[in-house]
Image (cartoon, rainbow, N blue to C red; front, side):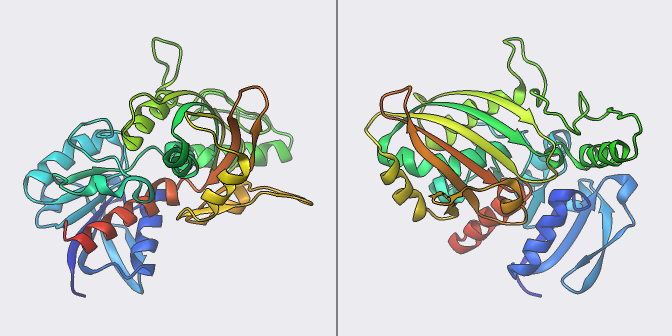
Length: 337
């Protein structure tokens, strides 16, 4: 192999697995690849592009000499290890929430604001997965008409809370089929046959941390501090792929037909919005796909000039691993790593 010395921190997790698959499929230019995880996972062997690679413990020493590191191991480990690795010259693409609001850290969806990568200082952040699913649909419309306000509800899959939450949901499904009691310890309530209107940690203002990410990250990515966003985040009994329902208001008129025209040519977006017979995207349609699917695009009769739409995306791919790989590929093309 020739190319970059790359590390994947969090290689044994769900996002890490998708990162490894994408790096192999995309023929990312690798001179070497280190798989890093917690001490309890060290010693495992994972397949990569026809090889078997060992998993090492994530330490400062394990990142020595790396040109590029993908971090998908949680905010605490990112805050601990990423700054020191950056100081030694490693470029970090981080999937956690640790640095998303830091002014010197670009927060990037490549189809939306790739220019933010120019002049980076060695640390780049992937936005929250639901923010990505939302803005892949909304940013092209914002460029046309100027988004002024959005009221958003998310429908977030069990796997968005990690493998333990997905395992708990699967166990509840089996228990329900066998007539056994349903138990919850990872998620705040039983998810099987239920929806949970609470994702993240509670803030003093009554919102959750997940809900606050929508306005904070949207304003940064769109580079528009005047955009107002109100969000309710909901966990739903779906294994994979998040969905977002959005009520949008714009500064300039935007008809549904024009919105569909814009989205049909937007990179990374697939419009599924037919009336006869009705067609629309669902989480099953988006699972395992790198695009974001948009449908139910229609006029909001309650607000002059308002639009309603529905977007769905795989939170492990476009919401995390694929977005990170896109950032890295952009850096390679531009000589930024």
